[in-house]
Amino acid sequence: MFLSPKRECFSINRMSSRIETNISVNWHHQILFTKDVFNAENPILYDALKREAQATARKTLIVVDEALSKAQPTLTAQIKAYFKTHADVLDLVCDPIIMEGGERTKNSYFHVSEIHSHLDRYHIDRHSYLICVGGGALLDMVGLAAATAHRGIRHVRIPTTTLSQNDSGVGVKNGINAFGKKNFIGTFAPPFAVINDFQFLTTLSPRDKRNGYVEAVKVACIRDQKFFEEIESKADALNHFEPASMQRLIFRCAELHTTHIATCGDPFEMGSARPLDFGHWAAHKLEQISEYRLSHGEAVAIGIALDCLYAQNMGYLKQKDCDRILRLLERLGFQLWTNDLIHEDANGQLVVIEGLEEFREHLGGKLTITLLKSIGQGFEVNEVNLPSMLNAIHLLKERSTESGNSKVVTAQI
Image (cartoon, rainbow, N blue to C red; front, side):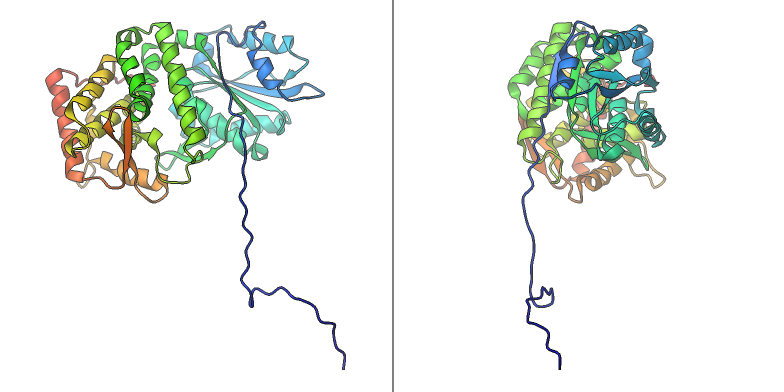
C-alpha cells in the first residue's frame, strides 16, 4: 500500500483563522489662496503641480464653467497663455473644455461620461492632471469623473464661488444626483490641490456671492462662537460684498471645514454623525421639491432656521440664541421661508418630512441629526419628535409673515 508523507494541511473546517491589519493612508490636502491664478507671473499653480519630480511635462486637461467663461471672456486665452509659459512642466492637451455648471450638470451621468471620453481621447493617465475651474456643482461632477477614471486621476479644483471656495470645493466628496436624491452617486477622493482665486468672485451675481455665507454661519454655529460673533460684526459689510470681509469669511470657513475632516476621525463618513450637515436634511429635500429653484445656500439657510426652532421647541437651545442665529441669516440677505415647506403629497403629508428618511438612508441606516445646545456647541440626536418639527415649520411661517420676510428668491439658477 502506498503511504503519502505526512504534512500539515490548512483546513477551514478544523480551525478558525483570520487576517487583520490596519491600513493608514496619508493625504496631503493643500488649499491655496491667491488672485489671478492664470496670470503668467503667478507661480502658485505651477508650484503646486511641480511638487513632484518629473522628467517630462505632465498632460493636463481643463474644464471651465460655461457661466464663468461668459462672464470673463478672456479666461480661455489666459489659460492657454499660462500653459504656454510653463510648457516645461505642463502640457495642455487641448483648449479648455467649456461645460454647463449649476445643479443641472449633476442631474445626469451623461456629463461624467463626456469627461471620461475626453480623458480617454487624450490619454490622460493617473499621473496627469484634470483641472476644473467652476462652481461646486461642476466640481462635484468633474471630481466624480476624475475619481473613477483609471481608479483615480489627479484632480485639481479651482472653485469660483463663495460656496465652493469655503465649503464644497475644499472637501473630499464628489458626486451627482440620481433617483431624485441629492448626491446619490459619488466618491470620497481628496483632490490633488485646491486653489481659491478671489478674483473669480468679482463677476458673480449678488445671489451667488451670498450663497456661501450660510455655510460659514453653519460651521460657526456648531464649532466656533468667536467666528459667529465675527460674522455678526461684519454682517453689513458682507451684505454689501466688501472684498476683505468676504475673503476673511471664506478663509476661516475653509479652515474650520478642513480641520474637521482632518481631525474628526471619520474623513470618509463611515459613521453616522455628520456635523457639517447641520441644517442639510431639510435643505436637500427643499432643493428637490423646488426643482432646484432654491439654490443650495438658500435651502440651507431655511434648514438651519428650521432646526434652530426645533431645538428651541425641544428645550435644547435658548430662545435668545435661536433668534440671534435667525437674525444673522436675515441680515446676510437670506429669506427664511418658502412655501415648499408646506408642499403636500397625495396623502396630505408634508413632502419635506420625507427628507428625514432620505437623510437616514444617506447616512447609512441610523438617523443622526446635528442640533445646537448653544452657539458654537453642536450635538447629535438620533430621533426627531415629529409634532415638534411640524410646530417649528409653523413657527417659521408665522415669524416670516410677521416680519414681512416671506418672499423667496425665485430666479432660476
